[in-house]
Length: 141
Image 1 (cartoon, rainbow, N blue to C red):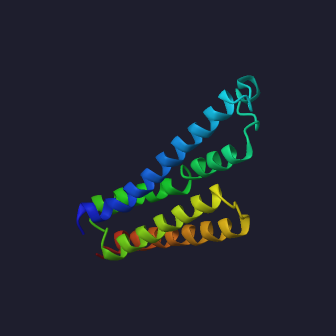
Image 2: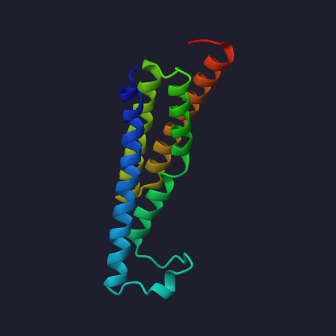
């Protein structure tokens, strides 16, 4: 696979993370300048932010957790030349699920729906890692 094909899902995941970061900063800045929140009430990460700002912040922080394993796997897959068509398809499925998870997280925030999307994404990533490990350890690919 070309490096563009392998890295494009990773780039989309990075863009999602930065979009959520900027959105979170915008909402938090607005809450402070609008007088909804006093800086002294949130200086030590106290939970004093408005609900929607908290939703977006939680969605942002979530992009720094499970996707970390995706970033590492993508880099390892490329370096070891084990990033093939199946890898890229599964990477796109994982990123699409992360996009869906962030959408639900920042809108309706339906925990059952969000949790289901998260679990499916985690399973896809686990399968990606399992396939990668087997290919490396068994000398396949």
